[in-house]
Length: 448
Image 1 (tube, rainbow, N blue to C red):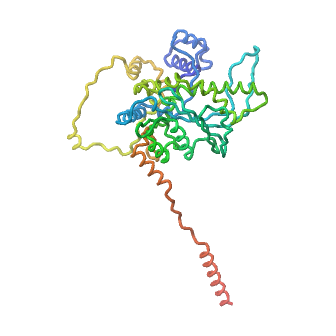
Image 2 (image 1 turned 120 degrees about the vertical axis):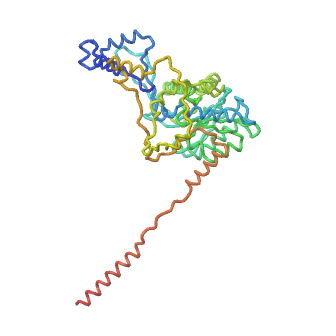
């Protein structure tokens, strides 16, 4: 998982396997230390389950964080919320709220028909980079989408920035166009005015645990309005955030197509941040449909709730990073501890399918070099515990009292004034130098 073989790597592996096992292979293979391309196409034709695909990039943080432990912690917290007396599993009061940054320009190009033999085909865009605008969307498990919130890269927000936006949308402004701690409570109040939640009928909001989403003000606003906030595990929204799974992909495609059509209809006019609301409105109504929203909740296992929605193959990306910790001073148990402990030997049931290690050992007995010896499986080095690292986050119910107290203590520690070291007084040192020079002058005069 995430360590596949390219065409060139597969050809090199076949050559090394044949050479180290003294197999007969064509002489041209020795020229480039790899098999010929005809052999690779023959392999693909003999195995119909093999395909050549373009991989999607995934960061190491996401590959490590998306594991069974983190996912089960999230579903345990979700079950704990649903087991409370005043919370009903109503899809109309189960919301997810992500934020996504969009570019006012459309850098993605589509395929076009052109003359045969043309090497380059151009597509007109407004600028090189465009302007960054953040769109915050909120949907519930029933398939309803709330009017979004737009964050423009401006100092002050003007009403004309929302011309053509979906009905009921709200606009904000920051200097960078990003979400921050001061702005998110206002965005949350915008969605709370549209939600059917209260202390008598509490609702659930599931979102990522960004620092701007877990402030004390956000927690207090949610508690006052009867909203329970559950956070996703860190770096897992690419598989667990419903909008990232099924909605933002179609929305991006519809938005890029709308940008291209706008440039063709308005020749010589560049796209700006003020055009994003009207252009994204068309894409919003096409992508945020009831079918898409309900499918995303079902695919992520949130509604209907299914903690086993992810198979073991989905967690293979984290297997290379399951590494032990370095232990310098390992204490061995003493005799008294060994005598007191009861040793229980479990009954081992033989597995009918041979493990990879057993297969490799069998091949070694016959003098055959396995492909794993030529190209070992990826594995990370043991963790070094000598260096101090920042504590990792996890899924949590941040509106509960223990989590709120932790946020309060963290905020107090940040606001605590730092002690400044006392500085040397330069005036006293200068006076001492003058006195010393005066003494030297007196001694010189006495000598004369």
